[in-house]
Image (cartoon, rainbow, N blue to C red; front, side):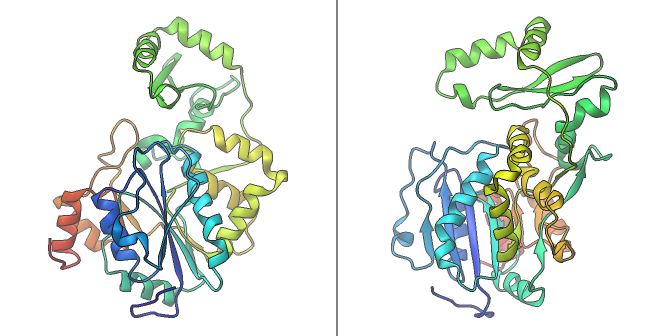
Length: 342
């Protein structure tokens, strides 16, 4: 494995879950492979997964195969980066850190600074962990409370899962009724006629009530749930513990529950680590080392792209990466934070 940079002894695997090889992903990976091993999982729904020529024979670049279909806020995000991790495990002798990124992440500080930080804090992992439900509904635009909204606002009734893989609707308790909050399109992504019919039908309360009865009631979990960012920087030991937890049949019940949650990617590793008592929780720092602007998140739970007003906030933060970045974001970051030519 090629190693360059200030801290040549630190071994890092970057796992990137992306939709396709767009300009942002290419620029991100071009920076990462200068220092570390990079494994990219491209969404199976993508029309193209061809590796750009620069990466084809690069000793630090791996394209994850086979690929899976990945959906926003879904357990498939966890499956995608664990698939990449499994592929790389034979190469990870002596690895220190696994850094999980989305295809819309971008460094906001020099990668040599990131490596220096990890070297100085070697053994510590960085995961955002929040007990659920939270009292501050501004966190993640309120999405962190949605799996438990019914238990908080619907006393005396048996709560249900707000999202079920067998059902394409997300529910929220508002006032005196359950409303369909958001249509999840992935089962019908290629059928626009069916998509239109479902969008029309979901407006009617009778259908909502009938659909709710067909789903049936499900009990709340017998274990505490924790949430946080899906993007993590962890030691090899933490990732191995997480992998073993997912594979252990004793955890089937808890994993089955997590799979059904809306935004399952933001609950899985946090809930498993806390409930299965990872032995070195004192070495897990409650931070994801990312700058994410949730104050301008859209209705579907996507954080805002980095813009000029974010630059000063990023420079004052402890972030080493940002989410989300597009070409405009990259130009701003390169100019104001990385002193790179745009």
